[in-house]
Image (cartoon, rainbow, N blue to C red; front, side, top):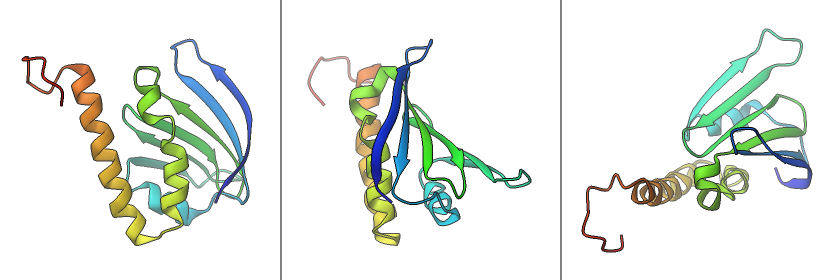
Length: 130
């Protein structure tokens, strides 16, 4: 899957950035299975069109319908500069199959470490760079 275009972008009341993307192919259950390796997925399959949401805490949330090529992605404002490309990374590493899972988990850990430093929860108060 690849992004064809960004349909709309807006800043939400809480300061997060919401983007709607049109993909070159519909969202699949295989993509949802891939997402489960990187956060929590909720699937409402009893609806006329199965609806899903994905959440990776402090990173992004993704919402859409299985079988549709459009998706809504919300980026957290506090870490927008760190997670702004995360949806693109999900799509890229999904194409790599099982090998992509491990690679993206490593990238996610690196981003999380940077978030922890920014939050000041690294336990190091010496002011030295991480």
